[in-house]
Length: 482
Ligand code: NAP
Image (cartoon, rainbow, N blue to C red; front, side, top):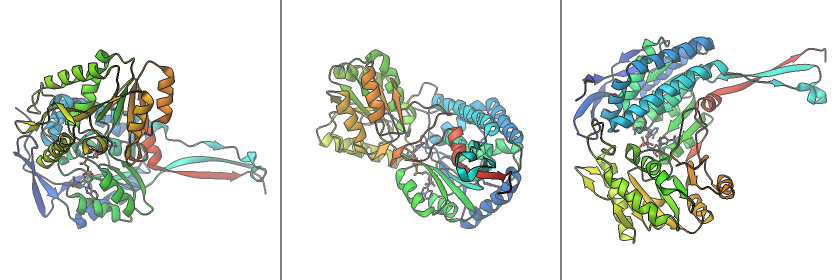
């Protein structure tokens, strides 16, 4: 079915070349359990070799002109456009992301590198009005933004190409070098992109991909003094551990959530069903801003539940390489078992499963649960599976209380035609971003993106990631003799 070459062994990518490791581990397809490739498992020594290469390459990339860095990123855009179908298959095979969504991820990855290429050309500081202070008279000065050095990037499995792009793109745009540790389940997308950068003329050592386990490779990157910043996307538990160990290193943490949408009483239900299906079930719900909780006003609740359940039951479950498939396997059997146990807990506590809740050919069906107590795991923790809860509320204000009663705060959505309700919600919701008349799952790649509470710190989106990956430096000229 696929024409992607099955590569026996995938090595580390250090200093622009393939480097063998002492150990390799089989990579299995989450859907078929077949072995896809043998992946190098780096140890601490090899990780340090990658950091050394990045440190040396920083001297090259940090002196490269903005137009040259931009041109390399533009070239990657071109190459990825040419190979978009092949790249989508890589994503689908290693992560079981249905191919239609994998193609969507490649399209977004292209946009992300395009934005990075554009951003490379507008990194600048500002002039400072020194004479605003009596002591500053006779001075002129300005800030510049300097790259910070070696960036350690640690990425998750759920968007294995675009979330790598959100780290590699701005790092190169701003003149930094990178040691990238992709998720163990999805190393192929990262290695694929590294090859494109080599072809695009990126100097050796600027991008290094070190595959292996989080506790070995990740820890070695975090502990190393030559690494100036850790940019991490993944689970809150690992993110908090990184923050505790990072010391004075800069950290950007893009973590999880249990994102919610509020449906006010004037919502046109027919217009929101498709968006809510996409928000809840794309990539099997394995999206950090996946729609996990719906709070529907009592006047529209019954209508929404009926139509949403009906639509959820229509989604095709199956092989990720089938263009008709909407839902495929979760990333591992362990995750499937966990999601099932959370659904079981809900059932034991008076919640009602109206769709799904069980496996079909080993795949968790799209699941809709109502009447869910806020303390149940499917509501208060990040479910990261095709599971959505729908609860009835009497007002937008009551719904906001439920949304905010969460450890997380990434994004939230509110459907309403009432501008007072929209304004109130946009101010009161404790999240990184509020979507008025949309689902919380909305994202384009240039917007500032990040959360509050246990959803993380710092922002991605090219311009904002470049800010995080550069240091401000002030230059002051004394033009008088004082
Ligand atoms: P994860 O288990 O936290 O893993 C993320 C990365 O951290 C992987 O590369 C993993 O390596 C590595 N890692 C594991 N233990 C480590 C350690 N002790 N030190 C350093 N690195 C370590 O997350 P995941 O299951 O891949 O991804 C799902 C999570 O990511 C969800 O919580 C989701 O919400 C979040 N996410 C957030 C965003 C956002 O932008 N806010 C976007 C996407 C996903 P191994 O694979 O080798 O364990």
